[in-house]
Length: 79
Image (tube, rainbow, N blue to C red; front, top):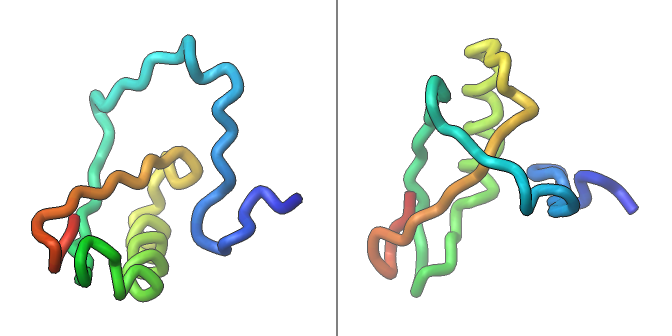
């Protein structure tokens, strides 16, 4: 099975992560806002490539180490 079946995000592998500690110190954050209808993102297909393009242009040394966090601002928008 492919490690990246959606073409956007690699498949999660939670094995061994229970003992890991995640630190956000010295990490950069990138923020995009999505449009939603009743908490369902409707423009995610345009946001995800833009996000990865921005990371690539920045030559980020963490390009393969990312966490995609979402937050519903309202029923009509999310971050």
